[in-house]
Length: 335
Image: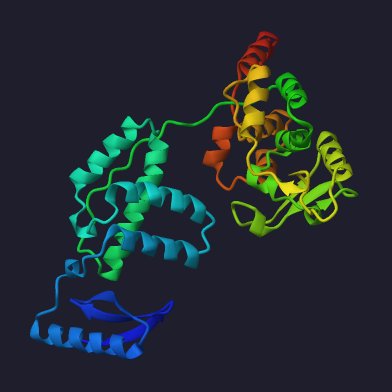
């Protein structure tokens, strides 16, 4: 049986094999000599058939969450902030518990509790996905023997909201001035909220009438070129006139990054008669308009940044007006 020692951060870890399977174990020390001694102990135990059970490490859920956190950092995942929110909810229920003592029944109780708090299946699935990933990593590292059953629930939360043009015009007038150009750009281009709020003038070419999104600023990590409609270009020119010295952001509030505008949004959507409208529905509205304008779906997907046809189709909503227009066209058709 062979093994090795290696650094992970500042801590030395050991790696060895048992039954043809690779195991890793933290020495808990910043000194290489301690890891070497631990490896020698494990090799001797293996020779005598006395290797400890994996559960003897008594890893807690906090340790498993740390593995997920490191995995996110190493793979440059952009949802690290969301992970912290999910982790806090998991630790609220399982914090301080030994991971090998978390059972399927306990997870079932957690599920019932979360449903009782009114969360939707999609939200719960995100939490259980992190828990599942934590156990998978822990099993790979030799911290637990196996993973308890962690369910996955069917999601039925696909949104169907969108704005007709008259509703768009009405709501834009009800928003505070600093949000109007942002609102227009979302409606015209289908860009994501995060893409718009992080948009800088270095990405904008007013002369060519386009936006060049760098890979680092897109959800799909792929660069995107967006040519603007006249309405979109007008919105950007308006934003240019309202720029603040020292602020590179296209959309801002008095030179500061826009973080939260829920109060203004809620007030405007209530007054406009669209109380359930989400900002993300503007993305859906833009895509729907592109398709109905005759833009090829492949081009529309390139503009909006959709990578898969499945998600694209969910955004391409049929309205009552579409159905009425279909009947009108059929009425005019004669054999």
